[in-house]
Amino acid sequence: MRGQRDKVTFSPRGVAASFIIVMAALLFSCGLPTSEYLYPPAFESLGGVIRLTHKTENIDDAASAALFKGYDIYYRIFDSETEASKSYDELDSSLTSTTIATVAPAKGYYVLVKFGDTNVPLIPVSDNTYNYFYLNLNTNDGWTITTSTGTTLFHHVLRDKDDSSTADFYLSAQYSSTDQDYEGDGISSGNSVYIVFFAVAHGVSSSSIGTDIYSDPKILEPIAYTPGGS
Image (cartoon, rainbow, N blue to C red; front, top):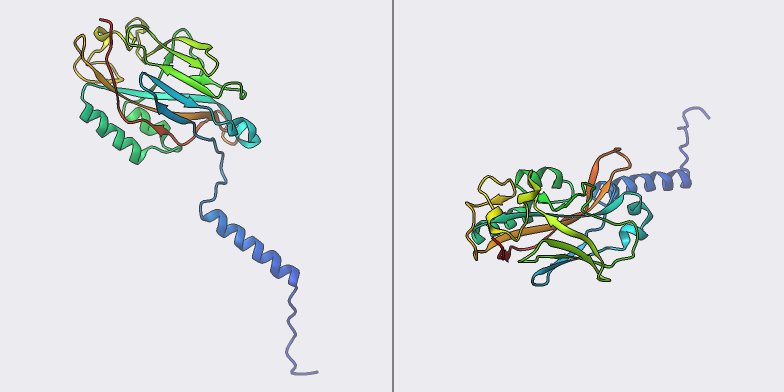
């Protein structure tokens, strides 16, 4: 019939599909996790020992397990407790999973070193055998890393210095104002330093081959440490 407007028909299925697409776009734009993800470890000071608790989700979650390699522990040493606390506050406000690669070195934080072992990460993990890893802050001998079963994984954990023969934490004479990991003028026997640590899960991206990825960090407030050797 001339003059009659064309009829417009609506498909319920089409409307529903469009609605789903729009809602999905809104959800993803609101910050839901859509990228590669690692679960951060629990990390706590127990008085002379630091305990890192393995997050089993990094193994049990297939998506994370495809990326996960283990855990890293970063540190920086200070003569001044005030400066150590200031650095802690700066990390607490600026350090995230996506800024670790830039913020950590910019603020002078380095991963602990295993003597004679350059493999990364610091603590490699491929299964759920161990629930806990302990960093033993020995005051009269080299630092070690042990497990929840008492096994010693690494017998000699060092500072990140070019000369490993002067990289022990427990020897006061091995702290120099030129050290990259230390903010101070050197310490006398019997004096304390203050160390800020943080731990992260460490993995390798599958979407950007060869790129390191990290969990959110777990940061400890400054720990007083007194080297017992000279």
